[in-house]
Image (cartoon, rainbow, N blue to C red; front, side, top):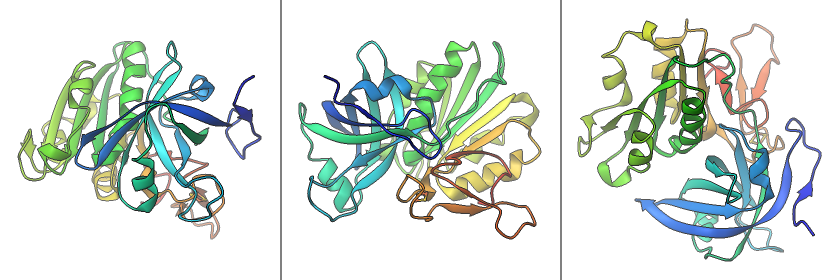
Length: 274
Ligand code: FES
């Protein structure tokens, strides 16, 4: 009998709560871990969505029960999903102790992912990631390559020791790396690379990373009709309950807001105030 239990969520029609099995669990970079999980949930996920992972033992009230983590890869043949997270706090420290063969309680897929239906074969797509915002872009980039798009990646990390997935992105398309200290790739920020190119050459932009990086991209792509930002750093409970993720919109309406977890995490540039 299936372990997966179908739920009726606020927005996503295919959300499942499932006990998934740990297939692989390893450290990729400084405090950055890759967790590969097997289960039925993988068949419903699309690029840009995330899962809500239980990080406390069953029956324990604290620490906060779940953490939102973006999906970085799906293997439908193996029925596995890769998620990559930063170890920072009691919850993720507990998660980092999970061993191969153990069970992890996962809810998802959640949120509204990246819109790619406007793109066709041969389109030029810029993909920009910063730090722990890089993982969901890998699943996206694979999907775009399958659609026939030409992808260019710009990935920003603090240092070489914080970098991960670079070789995986290189297999999909042109890949540029920046590090704050210059220990890998170009010294500085993603914009140091992006500003070398005319913005008009991009049919679409997709980005995920820290808010200052997204703001810098918003300044450059505000008039672009197909620029999308994933705001996953702004997430709290992940399921629409805590209001920690609420963003104002530029509208004059006083109560016009969006929840990052259920209306996003992906928004068009300019749709919400960063
Ligand atoms: Fe709690 Fe969105 S993260 S309502």
